[in-house]
Image 1 (cartoon, helix red, strand yellow):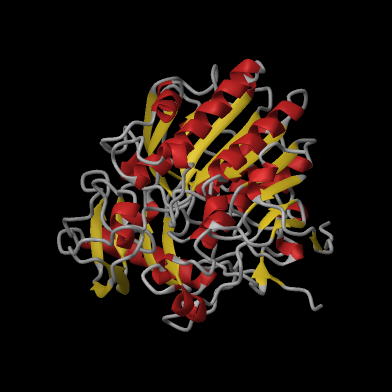
Image 2: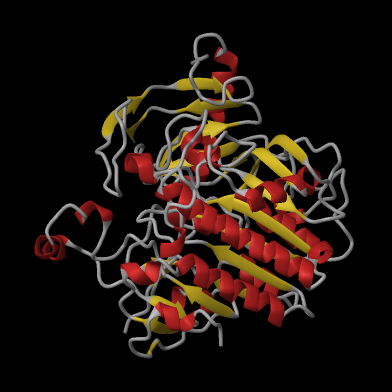
Length: 505
């Protein structure tokens, strides 16, 4: 049971002083709650779990998913020593809803977390939901969340009340502060007057340890997170652990250590991603030094696609269409790298569909843990991660994006039906530069069918040539609306659960 902890404010410490640490689904072939055996048995010894979740990293920002000009040697090593999944999706192309899905194994619509929660949000994860942290705690794991939380900043919603023994990081996105990039071009006085955000704060546990995170502090965020992560691993080398490392970068505004600025030769975005790559390298080196390599499953992925309006400060969706905030593959499909020597076949790839919601039940199976009493939507993907020849995907259907409660797309293992909706797009115009965004145009997406195996860029509408597939996916969409609702149709879903509500103070 979760308990609320009173918020303790400890003053004006700067970030630099803290671098040394003190579902059951009828749309699925297998129901997750039973954890039925797949063709590939999970390894017998439960591993440590390191889950690295990068913010706004695009599908095209890493090899072999894209062809970036800059170098990420440690992520390349992770790929060589593990497996990449090339058709891996988030539940939502926006921050908080994506994180809620990852940590609960549910579509974000089921748990009523939509969009990006701002400072002083009145909602968060409901106490009846089971998080990945709580799942691991119940099996005797030490747990830590180090980085961006973004699932409510009221005390009852913070990580220590949601399954994590330790927390160090920002409670929401690093742009939710008075120096928001949209205000960067304004004079200081005008920017302060227009800002709707309070000072950005840094937490250590339930305590605010920096009540005014500055640009100089943000330059050290990735370094500070990494040092805390390494320290956590070292302190828990002799017991099982879950390290959840949701980096604040590469979300705008971009920051790196001053000595790292310009080192990539390809701009600040590449500099920032290379610093994240350094972090991965330090964690890999720590696991090897402590002889934990073969005892640790490392998972690296992103919360959604790139924020394209920021132009040269944004990542790349590669060959995919559009980016963050949209129902197209550029918003939803993200790179996934997994490594566990001796269990995940090295230098391999899987082209079968899977999602972040599948990590929860897969980890539960590895830990021999019971799934929550409340239904979840993720499915065990052990056969995709560990089998020499992975597949098939356990998903028959997947509801790729609810935006503002509106169902905008549904897919199966091969085809995706985009339902009519409006979306923001640069529409061929260039993105912004220097940290300032360009405006989006609002466009209308018509009913469209795409073959994601042959056309992941969603450029050839097959609506007229495959009416039987369209009808089947429309029927699946109707069932989804009955279960999870649709605000456009003013339809209430029968299986939607309430978000947690802020306690009266």
